[in-house]
Length: 441
Ligand code: ZN
Image 1: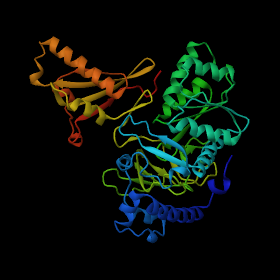
Image 2: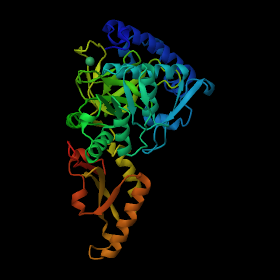
Image 3: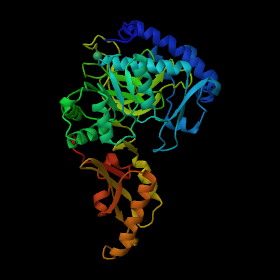
């Protein structure tokens, strides 16, 4: 099933032509209306008039998350605020938030791209769609909400606020046929479903669309069995539009990227050099239809690879593999984002510890926990001065909890345990050890 067959199954040569035309319009608008692009492109001597093919895009510089942070709050907007009808923002848990703006057209477009993804997995106006993503500044809730309404589905804006038990009750009583949420949250719901004595056969749920954090094929199998559904991956970037960038079709073999609205590249995250099809690297996206907040070669920080081969579903849109990791070691803990560099910033100013540390991630029943291991410095008191070390440990644990807002505890270990061992890690002061089972539960 297609929502937009004329674009989703467009001939490759026609798609490239469309991309170039839209790219030229976007570049001209960005250079004219966004000071950042006027400076980094026009004044830096890049002649955007010479961008004649999609490959020419590689001549232009990359845009980073820090560039967007520096423009806080409205510096990257390409239209005046009076033309913006919606504002969203990144959570800011990993640094300064990034505020994005949408024009009326952007919101309309966003809804239609989400609708594409829903139709691709068999959702229609006959479905009851329970959205258990956060609403508010986060793009997940409203993004999916508008897409599902566009299709004419019956939308339950459950949001992420109800408890997992309440969420399950809604699932059962309202006869939801589609559940949209984060995979870690779906797993928590599955645990509670069993505890509540609800058998999957008592539900009419058919489909789950899961995303906003990396997840594994093993977890997909587990959730499909637990809920008796087909589960599909979805991908979004809050700085661009949250859901609607790419999503799986019923073949479950990669996420079709909406190339008539985004140009995707994969680069080597260290050198910035472009990588070929099938090679894993950092995903870089250029928006070619967004009015309010256009981005040129934006570094997403997500690691993936692209597969241009035709798909059995009939779509010609390139497929990206599920995200396999992050360039910045971003950790997802119970769905909350934590950057090791943030841990480092908290520990850096602390007296009495060595600079190297290790982050160990574990699963304790339903919850994921994070342990930070550090070595006390020689002047922090010897191991027999237990009282002093205890106080220091408690103080540092509290500081981490206050700053990171996730369950974390700090323990002291021998210096040799936390010293990064391999030369590849020499520049990093930390290591991340993920001991969470790949098939939890
Ligand atoms: Zn497909």
